[in-house]
Length: 374
Ligand SMILES: *Cc1c(COP(=O)(O)O)cnc(C)c1O
Image (cartoon, rainbow, N blue to C red; front, side, top):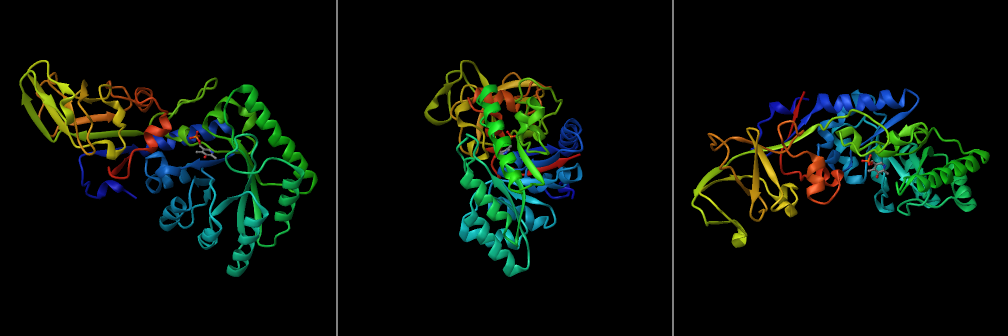
């Protein structure tokens, strides 16, 4: 698929370098080795990269599963790629479980009741429901805590004829080394107990991006990187040379030449201190740019840092481009880049907006077209 053949209907775009994404996933695969399967996390529209657009690159470079958070996300992928293995990390309400069976999606479960429902639906369709069981080792988000009762429930799931309990997993709170160790050992103890009951799983997993780099011993035989695929480096002790695959950019719609003392944007919260050239840029907070970057945000035009001035609007922002030699309408402005040209990286945006990198990329809305380069 070459998305670049499509006409791009806007100047504000999210550009994704698929070669970079491909080499990121290859680096992760090389690091974990061939005995560890890779579940590529593409929830929230592939962390803003476009789940459907990046799916082939991830599959062709060794992903065993594409993981999403919700049924809606799973169906979006299955509609285009019915044969790609898709996993739902979150809960699917009972009334919607038939979609999971109809579309051959692997589902997270944490009760015998859910498994029994899937069993009946699968039987009707002459299929086998594939599930991974979620264990709560301390995060207290999804799954049940390890206990004899839960072990009994899981043993009963194994007895269902139309359910294949392919995997079991948990999630770390990453609260600290000590806390991680506790969670991991709860998980391993529970796996031991289950194994004694004859419940053996093909896949066991607990490590997200940070854990898989910082704690090689937690990789088990499957890892679930999200951030790392996209080049977000949040780990503390390990090293992996993944690179940011995404560039967010736009072009100047209009230039205004204003004298000193003029106010710009809502409430005139910014006023020119000199005769200025102001550029209107066609992106705003509805595209997912943090509105709280007022007085902090900037774009880079021809290598020159241009501060975003005044209140950010829903669809447009203004920048002071007085210092850009030969500035003209239509010039390209980098909103988020790889930093080499002085552009704001995702990491810098996260710290300026007082949030994390995943939030910055996941909140880029679906409005700007995704353009894939190689
Ligand atoms: C989102 C998510 C991941 C991926 O997290 P990253 O920190 O982006 O690697 C892994 N596992 C679960 C259960 C998740 O919800």
